[in-house]
Image: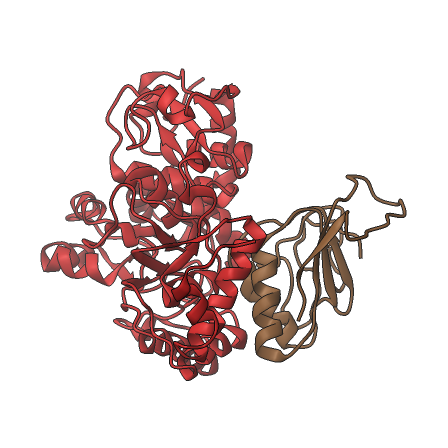
Length: 117
Length: 413
């Protein structure tokens, strides 16, 4: 799921349904559940780590993240959920183009795995 | 590769219990992500995770407690979902209140101090210049870095507590000298009367947050004293509209005796603040002039001086609408009956331990809610679904008496 705008989970995602509720976000109404989320960079509240962990706890979280730059909030939320709930959700940081719609090959030179249990 | 001390290694290996090992795993993960070469000792922490967002927060702290962990350094707690001094104010479900209480109790079990305030910099134990700390809560982070000269990155939920339990933090970003250099100069050449008005500070903060993102602005052009309450309003607004974690006020804040000290000699862009932008921000934060349903002041929590100022403003008056005053239990106790009784006679409700924009206290209101806080004005429409009027503390009091938002126009172009 390609998010053209960064998404703050706090105030942006309903942790019980996995739906995007931020009315200013282009993907409002869509579900993050089971998707690999591509985000150019993270955004917003430091409470987002809790909401990411909460979606995973509730079984409505994303299947993984591919980020354009390392985001400590996303990594924290996923690390805690993977540790507490035995999930194996990966976070990958890659050297990504600013535009979308192109096929990109991420190998060990262009990307690194920053979280995976 | 992060260089670990032998004690870091023994914490990671479980020699200090499973809870500490789990926390050290998270600190190490953050160090790897941020590119920190090593971890450093911290002397204090402030925890934002005691506000209830769901069971994962409870699971996390329970995991630490069950693993035998305790905080290793003095640790204060941010606002929670409940006012323990005035529990009757909470209008949410019993189920959520029980869960929120459980989360609060678990933090105290870990050894955190039950301060329940978003303004730990108003406590007597606040850190000083150069102290390495790990704080959560965006407004507290920006105040600690900018006004106190203490050093913290923006720690989110879970991360702040992991640092508190290990007493260690990744040595990166705002913990380092180089990471504190100003990245942009903000020039104030506005009429002096603007700088003398209390609303100027939250409006400037909102502008800075929206323009600077995660950058560090150095503000030049303050040819006046700026008190801590104004600095607090500036920082809280900037950390709401953007991700500001630190600003310099040249000539005023501890690491900005001169502009070249603040920029560490780096060449950075210079931006001017257009007066019309500030007028537009005031309108966008809430320019409703109609009937009021309630007033809420004190986000971040009111200081002793703000409480006394409010008592002077309301003395002998009566509010026509519910009037909420958010503050910490420490400030509430310090100001004592001479202030509290005056506020009560005005009809005000003092809220401690929590805040009206994050927990159900105000309830259904017909009409707008007026506030003197840019942060409250920014978040309350989404959190509570209310319309907002944004004005000074004096305007809030005048409006509460008449029951209608009465806004002056201090900023003329």
